[in-house]
Every structure is written in C-alpha cells, then in structure tokens.
Length: 278
Image (cartoon, rainbow, N blue to C red; front, side):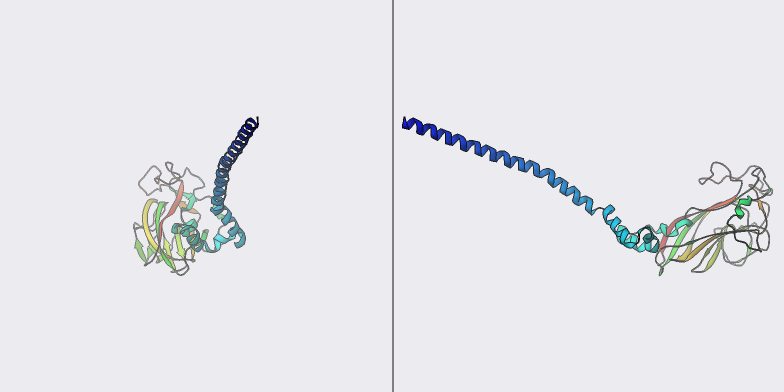
C-alpha cells in the first residue's frame, strides 16, 4: 500500500512538473511573439523621427518660419538638401513674359494697346507706357553667374546705334533710335548693363517678326534684374503688321497661346542654365 501511495505521489509530482514546464515554454514563445511588434513599432517611430517633417518643423520655428528661405535660400539649400538648383536663383526671370495686347484684336497693321497696361505703370513724361518688373537674383553675392536664356516671341523692331549685337536681335548697350518703336529690355545691376531683346537688322517699320534665340549674360549673385517695356506712344504694330508681307497673323510655336496667334506683341524669356563663371 505504501509502495502504491509512493508511486501515485511520484506520478503526481512528474505531472505537476510537466505542466509547469509547458507554461514556461508558452510564456517564452509569447514574449518572443510580442517583442516583434514592439520592435517594429520602435523602428518605425525612429525612422519617422529622423525624416524631414519633424526636424524641418523645429528648424523653421527657430529661424522665424517662412521668412528663412528668402534670407539665404542658396546656402541653406546647399547644406540641407545637397544643393539648390541654380536655375532657381533666377526666380521670376524664368518664364517671364512681356505682353502688349491690342485693345482691338481684329486689327492687322497698327493698334492701340490695351489701356489696362497703364495700371501699375511708371509715370514717365518721356513715354506713354513705361512698365518695370524687378527681381533680386539669388545665389552667392560673391559670385558672378553665366545665365543662359532663351528668348522667343513676336515683336515690332527697334533700332540702335553703337553697342554690340548677338543672335541678330539681342542688343547689348547702345543708344536706341529716337522714334516711337517699342523697347523690351533687361537691365542687370551688376555687372551693369542693359540688354534689349527686340533689335532687328532691317530697322524699324510696320512689321512684326518672330524671334527664337539663346544668349548668355553675366549676373552677379544678389543683384537687381529689371525687365522693362517702353512705348513712346499709344500705338503698336499689330500682328502681323502691314509691311510684314503676311496676310495671316504669325504664330509662335511651343509657347502660349500656341497654337493660336497672339494679337499684339509678346516675348517670353526662359532660363536654361545658371553656372558660376570660371
């Protein structure tokens, strides 16, 4: 009997020990299983914390919010994102348009331009229309950049004496003729120079011409660049102009309002590249 009781006790002891071991094993498996989600969550949180939204928000707050990029975008862009695209230095130069629409788009020789152009124009006793748009070129103030621009559009001609001519229509310096033909120009503060984009070798007359050319001009980082439109009177050569030899209006390809004609005159400037002078 004692032997039987001892055997039963031994069996109960083994059974209890086995049950305890199973619980420990499940606990370890459960711990391992629950550790993976926590690790993944921690990893994702760590990744999120090292991405730009949080750090950029904190940086912006300390630097005065949205005003910081305007104060030093080139150096900040270079340090935080590996370098700003130098074309961005040109700002609104890139894609800038001089536009002189006719008040009556049905006219084909000359037309009075839209009087809405006088809104925001400069009060200049020498000219009926004088409009200017100025930007500050970006980049390093200690660097002069070679800025490649493409000029496309439709314009009446302007004549000059002196100066230098590039690409047939790009007048560097010189003295404009004393007549009533329009001037579309770019004035660079440093190195100081005036560039007129609608010079034509045929001289002035009742015609318009289509232009598409590329030139490179030097612009100092941080200098002022001014786009100017001047008309000495209130009349413009319409598209195409009575002396152009064309009955139909000219259409400038690839840029608005293509495939339609622009009734008046317009010129678009696109910045193709910006590189430090070597």
